[in-house]
Length: 560
Image (cartoon, rainbow, N blue to C red):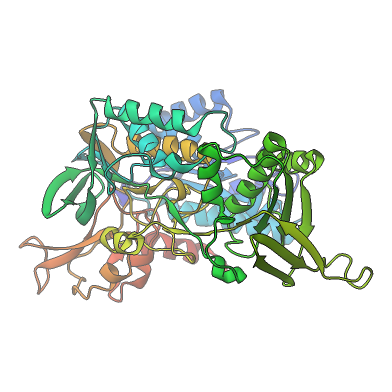
């Protein structure tokens, strides 16, 4: 098709933002002289609706089959022009965008050098357009069943959200009943509901939903396949059952470890952790008139949850029981929805906040708790240490991943983060996504979180699964790298370096090489990162829209 290439070049001044720095008249006159360029036009604002209709007519009239847009190249504008090409009957990947606005005019003043750079960028865009290739869609059969691992609030919410979007759901919980940690707390931050009532409501909704199959006492033993076509082996007792699924949601949660030895204390009725305090409050324990001290910040400082729970419980003890409440802290991390307000409310209600650094000593003496600490703010001005006597001491607990997290990560073939929780793939794009498409994280299995965040996360994941597996047959754009089998020596470099598990080695007579084998990329799994193309020692792999020919054509167009 290269010999029949007819390129149309459209210049946009972005309402004068570009032309105040660059003279388009000189550039357009040079671009018209380039081979394969059949039509050139400039406009004040190419993104206008009427301009889109005009471009469609100009494409048809001039029989253009490649389009270059010189102006800006943000994703919104690129999407607009791709849609214009679709309406004109041209493959949307036959579009070359040249970002003069941000790469030239926004960083340079009006000068001969900026004019030369703009000219060079326009020529590079045209050179690339001449090498662009059409990209088609493929149809793939998929399984829409979703496996949810974990029967706590996060798992139940994810199951309900997926079922609401038409997916069949298998909810696997390793314990003998649903509920997770929610069954053991007294109140929920940011949710004006009794935890027991909320739990009962979710359990009833899950167990009564015909699209959700609940399997208690069940864990994931093994996994094979990729998004849309996984086979999972579920283990219950000594029985292992294979099930075909399309996606997996991990919602295994977090667990707490209470270790008073870190503070020089042993086990005692008045030495408790935050979870024990939650259970005592839920069971109706009376703390009226008691002197209660809470310590935060000496362990698990990387998570906000322990800080906010301590402030929440301190406020509750003060308001419900008129207890004397002291909070000893190294740092207060309350940067979140209404958390600062709750902290201020606790101070106003009479909760005492005492800052310490390393200088704190806690001892138990005949049922009394003695806390000796030094305040870093007044050290050297008022002699210390200071001593506070308490009836109860509430210590922070370690927040750690649920039992079996490391083994589950190996089965799923996904990474763990620095704190040994499941690692997300990209915090800015979709925080619930892992390095493997089709495996998602909801709730505290990735980082200890709050109920409101967990519910939002469950909805986001369900929507993402539906976007990928919207029907039994899905259409996928084939933008994954492709392999020249004649150059492939099956060295497995690409197979080993792919972080997403998108590459397999296929065998057959159709592969024109000594081994009758070649690497192939799964379009539903591939993230188009280009690592395989960069690492291939035989240059057998090309990344669509960024092929070697396209890049070299741009370099040759540079005036160096």
